Image 1 (cartoon, rainbow, N blue to C red):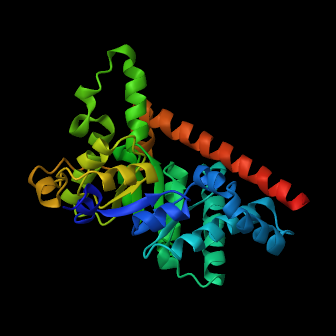
Image 2: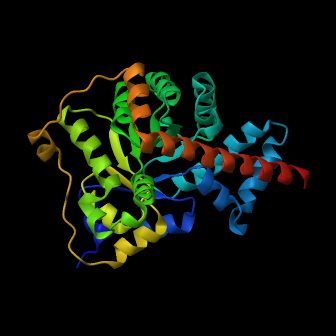
Image 3: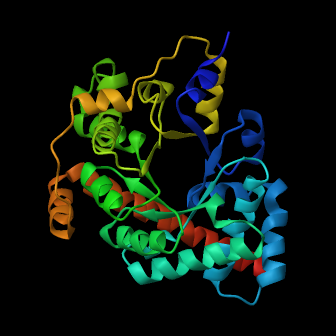
Length: 319
């Protein structure tokens, strides 16, 4: 009898959301995603110290930003030795409101991969879904550099990403769930907000239905899960990036798992076409307290971990 992870693979590309190489070998994802927090956690493990040491030895005269990019690529190369598909590598979150700087860092990351013999088709550059990040993606996509738009919490963000012709978007399920649960306080009823009723699941489904109704080619990858119920409710999404502990839970469950999202079903009830431009983007984001707050919080958290990564590299340089 197949487990839920194997069932999920039938209609969704499974992606590992981790910097843990062994977890990838165990669960055999097609792609893998990383972020500053995951890399910070992974680089502090004893078995990965050699990657940091080699980066410092080979590029010790470079700037802090250069060394961070080399370290991210070092992890990316290791990941690509395990997964058959793509790895997502993130531009420094501190550049989330600087279009040109984001473009330059993305080009640098791709160049480092190129010098390491990695084709750009196997790399997705992660950018925050701010207006500035989305405009950076528009430029990069036109150059053949594929982008994964992260920290995405709303349909207006997804529409702008589609207009920029981003390769992929990563709507965050769990963080949306977190916001609504915290907002409800004592009034939160878990059973009434589970599965298809989960606010994070509903957000991704709304984006999925819109994209499929209008044949938008940008891939949708649900991200940031808190439980396997959220994953099961999004079975059929183009991709889902899942942490090792939830991958393990899916692998251990033999309960039936059925497809929940389907392009043909989305087209039967096509949502109304919506205009997307900078004014509508900023207006709609301002109206959505959840999306505004979670985007800002996400950037702050990733930026804080980027600072910690800088500190780790500075300490390694002194040795």
